[in-house]
Image 1 (cartoon, rainbow, N blue to C red):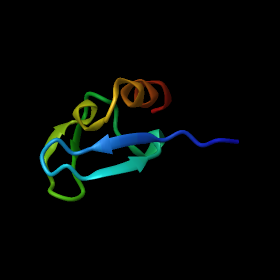
Image 2: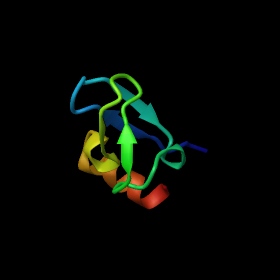
Image 3: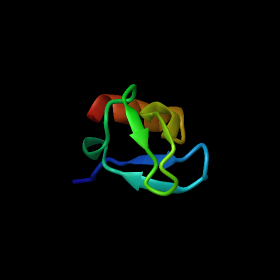
Image 4: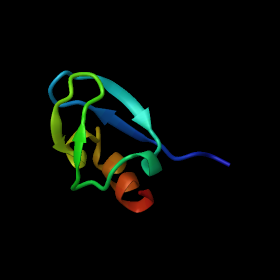
Length: 59
């Protein structure tokens, strides 16, 4: 069984990482970068539209 993941990119510090959709808040909730602590809606951290769709479907 393949586990889904979402690719993330901080718009401020450019840190990139992957996370399971179940470990992330809804796309419209505030998220804080674990590297620079920038605060923005979760949707702004997803790398692509596909990542955003995965987050919306599986979170």
